[in-house]
Image (cartoon, rainbow, N blue to C red; front, side, top):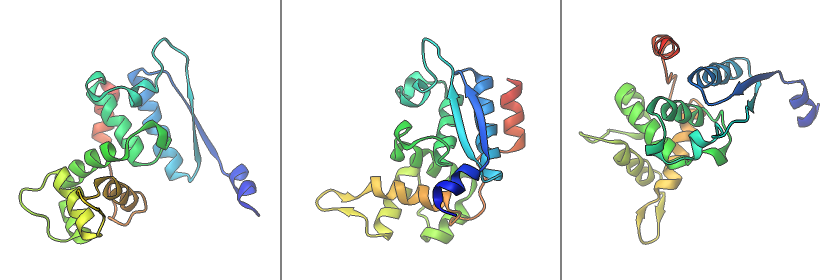
Length: 174
């Protein structure tokens, strides 16, 4: 069976997004469900004056924090297209989350973390450790961002969850 045939037989999770909090919650659920079922995620955007894709394309200050966090979680999981987000911005958000919740997994993968260590230092540490450098400007943070995202997505960092059942329930209730 060739790749196209496999793709046609792969189940599809379909979700509509209109930009509301409820549709963002549905998108988060659908992304997780597609991952669990090894299914393709198909997202339909409802037409509106301000399209839902503006959540990902608009400047950081223009977005609501909960939507921004949801967009970064989806991007970290690779559940939205690469053109909809900036790797470095998502890696910085993921790095901060991992430093807060999974520092031991980061230390296992990248070595002893300096104290204190923030998300910018983490990416510089990854770049240095993997010899990812630009000729005259030092560590290549863009390539380190991709490396961190790939390590997360492939499970190389270990078993990591980006949200708990309690967080999802609180978001749906609000």
